[in-house]
Length: 62
Image 1 (cartoon, rainbow, N blue to C red):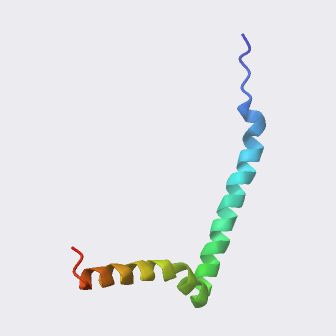
Image 2: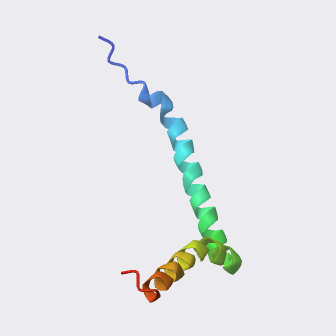
């Protein structure tokens, strides 16, 4: 029975993937924090949805 574990060979690749994901998250967070235009663009669907819900409620569709 072969008891060798193939995962240790992939550990460095997993480290690279995790590091890249974290780096992209940090870059995205910094861009979001630094740019009011980017923030507005990202959050626009939320406000559009909220306005649609208010409009729906005003029309009496309950």
